[in-house]
Image (cartoon, rainbow, N blue to C red):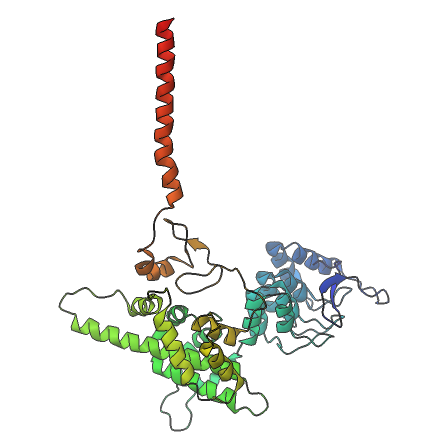
Length: 425
């Protein structure tokens, strides 16, 4: 959307979100050549050129176009995370409210469908509860256009100040529950929307949290659960349930690590061991039963739900009802995902990583081309199951063998016929 493009106007019934012209009575905004160039570079996604212009631009970047949109709002609507970061670094107001229909940069980021843009805006202090002129938040607008990952990202965002208290000594403690050096890693960990057990283990590894006593991590998660349920008028039972689930899985991973280290100590006589406890945990999670179900995951999640202490709340009743329903064909993991990240209005046909459940993986098994992975690590963790069924497509081999032989037979017959005719003549 350039400086001359129309704004997004909401309707009273929210039946559509479409570009419309700005009100004719609105005064014309006069922009300088530099301001016009900034809008132009954003509209064309020319990030290198935009960086040069901003480096020489010494004024505030919170100027607006005819629709009351700032450069940051335009960049968010384009889903351009690099341009968004440049403007934030330049001091852009993340909660600018000059748009004619009260759309914030987060509203536009939500409509773009970019999780990265929304996360950058939230980390910069964007207010997730800000509403437009028809009373819709950014998450609600994202849900309206089926940007479900954005909805989960916004609803699951936790300000870092909410967990800083755990990096400080409290009461009779001799040391804080969470070392301050791991504050950022823990912050990123709890905001991940993929709650597949394998992904949880990989995220603990990715964010350096295996260097911390995992029982402390679980204790922090349990305290955050209690805190969210103790708020009088702002009880967040969904986030409390997410903290409970994450804490339970962290405990399962720690038990697996303890078992692995004990086996490793016992097998120090040269006997081969599993390469790491993450692989051992992944094998527990991904091992399928006779019916193809992940039996360990089913049993673990059901036990996790049983241990949720706040049974009078809707989230607990909702999950238990669905787990107990004979008519519900969804797995326990799918039920938990829907409870934490929100129901989806239709069944998505989105590909998933066969190892960690990440959406839209960009790698495939090079042999069979049938299963997808995030990266080589996910493929390695899943190989113990996939190698049983992995094979090159049979259609290819079926065509190259018999088809070639048939062609040879036809060619030889034709040659013999031609030789006979030649000799006869």
